[in-house]
Image (cartoon, rainbow, N blue to C red; front, side, top):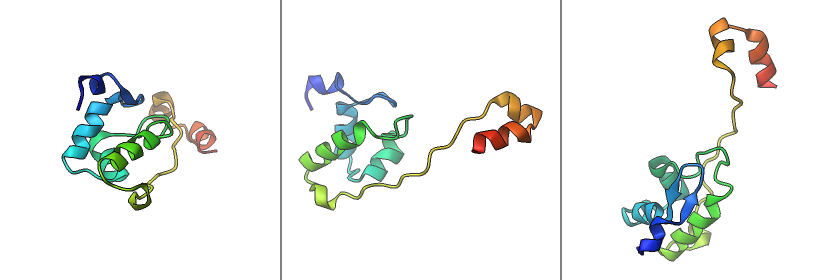
Length: 99
């Protein structure tokens, strides 16, 4: 790892640098799901739209060919609701948010 790796942001949402990603890969984490669980990579608002391709390239450089990389497990996004509606027990706002 070079000194520059500490300055290169890979996952903006979770503030992970290239050095962080390389460190995790060197510890043996070799799938997108493992990196996601351990490093929170791709768990921010963009859901990995920015960092996924960058991490796949790093996995490739570490010896895992792209054709052997699994796409990862993705869950549908949720909609936030306000704490006030939870506290009030408002089913009306909860039903609006569910739509």
